[in-house]
Image (cartoon, rainbow, N blue to C red; front, top):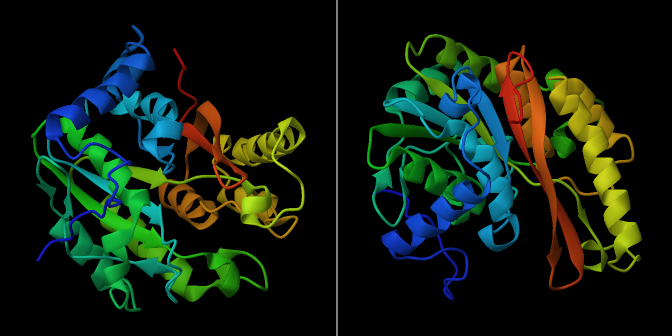
Length: 308
């Protein structure tokens, strides 16, 4: 049995028809602009990872395009480690699955050698809450873009869902929590020994502010500006490849902006360390119920890439 990516019954997230979905995703990439002449940007050479949104395409499509343009020529046989947010909040910091993710055109299978390599190194059970993958869109949307980019060519994934680490980290950094630290070490070790292309992608959003999320302040330019300033200050730490600094920046006020991608972003930065990044797009989407959600596109590598 394979996981079939969940979709809202009213089908507003993305078209179920493969051709219509291809056109929509291609439109986001085309709107981001053609690859620059710089060979690093046009081929994706040297790009080790991305941070992309997991907000719906209607609000975040342009930012997805700005992220995934860097993987236009992803090599055949690449394994994409896709780190997403477990919005269902299972009582485990990490949740793995053996089951593939389905797109309208095919099923993208889990990379079993990489999965087995991680599981054999991790001394805790990361499969106990596997069912949460079935309804989680933060990985699903990344898989749709990866499928579009590979156009039927060989591709495998390692889906990793992160619960909020905050309940495990009352005393400080996640690096002090064995269930977190040992997973990061297991994933780093498995990637290092993979012997083939591996890219690490975080499907993450940033601030969630406004009455919809429990704030007293109404949605408007002042609230949007404050959320943007807070998000960009934390993204400075992403650009520096500073996982601990990113965690500390978000948690300095107890995560009042409700950065839902906190744990997943921390994980991506730790797995890729040493790494540098660059924010290539930032956006905000309004929640119809009265909120603002921030999101960004970030390219992760050993040095700052050119935005082109």
